[in-house]
Image (cartoon, rainbow over the protein chains, first blue to last red):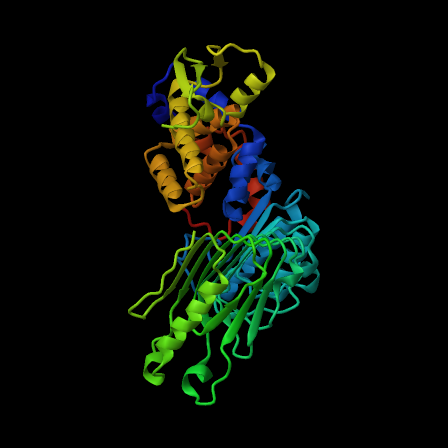
Length: 328
Length: 167
């Protein structure tokens, strides 16, 4: 390796070069180690005496059981022995790490409830700012975190979001594959600025879903599924699902989801840019004759309500005529 | 090229190996160290040459390329978009580990947070899944453990080495 280094030119010889790399500030080394899967960070303890304790200064932890002890995705199946090793590893790390604040925790894939509680309590105690996880059953105390700014949850399969939601300090929230089962979840997040709902769905029982947060600036709802067979198949139709957005600071809205979904956002007065895309489910065409007209009139009503927006696009897929409007 | 401002100011930077760089002001101001130089020397003449005794020409050229592109991305409102990711991926693809280290030292000295974050992330990605020997060579670390000491450390951290399966 040193020989290879020498082949790179520049007036400096290799020895000088190594000295300079030795001078790489500890903070940068700690930062690099913080970005790696934690098991690789810990293993640098055998590099040299100086490096023995570098890893204990990591500002972030990255635990992922399916990568633990192996190349990514090489052994995807859950095995008891591996799970035990992973759990042992996590407990050791939490015990040995220096008690600094935790900037970010990535935690994926433990079925062991006690370990999960241990990890989340550790995160709470170390004032975690960002959490990326595939788990949703946090210990109740964790919901009261006053430090968590960013939360990203992407479970392996569709999960029901419990309420109350808590997390009063959140500014960024990203939920993926979550069933939004109760009507008004995010009202506890008074500081929320960015909300992303990806591949989420409304529970069948939810008629009206509220998103009301005073500081929300960007709202992205992509691939929202509105499961509503009754609407399409029954003659005594129920009302269409209603999404009520009460966000006086909202500037940008991106919504892509299945029709029927009505939108009410009369409290959003400072909107700059709105893009709405509705895709009626394929089966609807066989069951309703006038759905297209109905859909268009709903869209028109939406456009009227949003006429104050500087930049507006509304479109309906599947319809031959896509209904687009641009208001300046 | 940044087309901000009418009378475009040029900042002169001189590297450790004596090369003179002419850099557009918005790009040079990405370097915290240059910015504070001018903040502290408000009456510095326009043709003042800022010496950079810890940076040589090659990494500086790379850094200027990166910062120039990112200043333009920000001006075009493209920050955080796919084209930025694409640029970053292209930028780093051709860089050897050696060049990366040079860049990180220079970016650290010049104090450019955005670039430093990007570079450290790249290094972390390159180092994960790698053997201890690889990482040792990468950082140019001399192993000062005796075999017995190293054995003892491995034993103490045995829980971190279970099922090691590196590239």
